[in-house]
Length: 361
Image 1: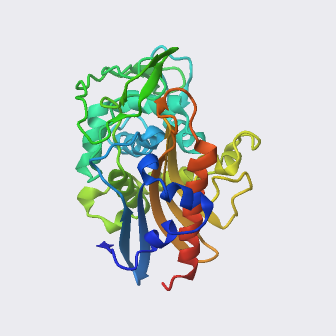
Image 2: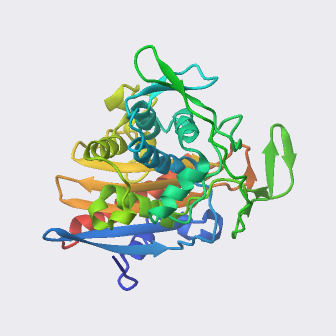
Image 3: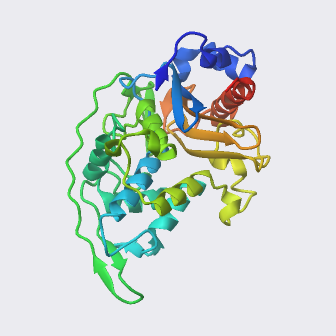
């Protein structure tokens, strides 16, 4: 891997006069943008990554939202390899839950429509401590996943048992996992804004993200590289996935909701694809595949993507985050996602895609 600073195409893209880019760049202090872009060059059987960063800083916090579902999916597949009695198509349900599912179904739902409940079921299977340790062992760091998403028991350090079907009628129950109590993060901008709502009450003080999930750009991009191009990493840095599991993961990462039965009127192609197509409801062209995971919550939009155009021989990786919370009040559901955030990310993707189209490989 190389990191270049001279002749930076990312800086060129961010210098665009397009209003969707310019209005953000003219007020960077407000939008808290962080970006990593990776060029991919091939030399016979070998690859070279060239990274370009913009304001990437593991010491400056942003809320990762649903992007944490990506590592949960990868680690769940790895853990399944260590248990002889179950596999990704094994049926199970969480104690106290009425929904039966499989690990495959949960992972598909995570990528197709960013289902929170599907993610939380994987958390009950993994536990926070093991999830974090496995990621760090592979070089995906820094990271700290410490809570479930949109769940009443989101912060519980003890997981719920899984009721697992060993055949059509026989079940076994897994043991609860007791995790360490999370320690408050000490990072720049861990407290944000000037106020927040808790239920119907407004508190005139910054919102404290200290106990929330932490998954910075560096770690997101590191996981993406290891999943898309595992052969570029040492055995110690690769996740222990079978060929079948890896193919399955790549397939679900790029799947469009309509391809797996979701209604196009509600779940249009760009529902979970912010780069290039995020500000349009038009179909994504058949020759373009985007292997990614987005997140949006608390006014923060993030996308971590490998973009591949098979027709034009273009591929690159891009991870970016932006905060769109003009009134600086959290939990008021007044965020400029559609007006500012998604147009910026879509145009950023287009600028870099156009650059890659013209770049000599």
